[in-house]
Length: 510
Image (cartoon, rainbow, N blue to C red; front, side):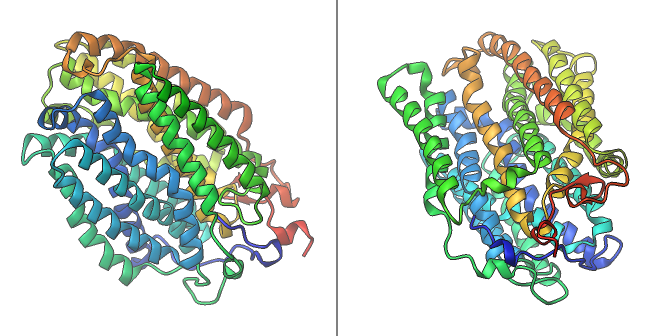
């Protein structure tokens, strides 16, 4: 994303939208609904995978691509999505993303074979890249500073519910009207979301603020988007993902793709450092808090991506659950997120983010290790439920503070960029996990058709996911800080008791 010229950046505004006001509730409802479409499709498909594989006669590789084609375009383009919102208007780009997502969902629902389904999933990811960063940036730009932490907590909690409820909704649809309705469900959601957004959500970015005026003058100075950087980043992700998924064959083409992917990644870093208007401005990582939380995000969402990809399959292939039963089995995480995420955001505001971001991953790791008890004829009460209660507690502790800390680590003028980077980190982590775990655990192309083979691979996968979460917890403990009480230097400026870098004007003493 092209970076605003330093002299043109404006200090944080104070919009008057409050959660207690009707308009504030409409803004929250719309952004949660839109982002939940993208989050829901990140997980709802997992429960449908065995039925999709059977109906379309697909092997495990095709099922991996069904998940990863979506994640690939979402992760590769999400920074451009944030930049478009900051430049042309966040509400406008958000609505465009919702419509695009709905059309791509229709194509998924009508797909006659795996190839068409994978291509349509890639198009879905483009829509997700437009709407996802905009939803969070709208909240950051629209709400009064005193309400932002709670608004972000509610957004995170309900958005997390959207992701967590995905397996249940997917199972219900697969056992009912069929797996195609997993995608067709997005159309009525979009029909509801778009008119509400146009009527009730204030425009921000692109020179507009909720109360009038212009807080993004720098945005008008943007000359062009970083097309080369976006292309190199997407190419890196695509080639590395292909190499990981196809690595079981061990061919020369796979090796060349892996080398080319690494080279594209190096080229991406070089281009971003050299450009005057990079998509990923290196300067944003001058905030140690921002850098640290994004590293924690990589660890956490890699583990989540691997878990949700494999858990639904484990419950169906090994434990013998129906798609609906497998989706229902995962509901405790949804209930916990719904009940306690907003309180978790408030708690993190009071005590700082370090403790929640340290304890949350450890609880999730414990829940994943408890999933090792889930085998053939597993008891739900004795084996499945304890694991999911522990994991749900960890998600409650972790998700809202993680999101709030990312946004609080940069000034409001870069909310779209910060949201895009953090979302990209989460999606890249999930993308790599889904691509790499079958390879690391020795899962063959037909493993999901054999209970014994899949169970063996699952038992190797869960400790790997738990280990990544432990690394994330250690990173949070070592690197995430809250500012010292009474510190008034610019570098100690805070949003909601979380440290943030100073604005340009503060650095220059203006």
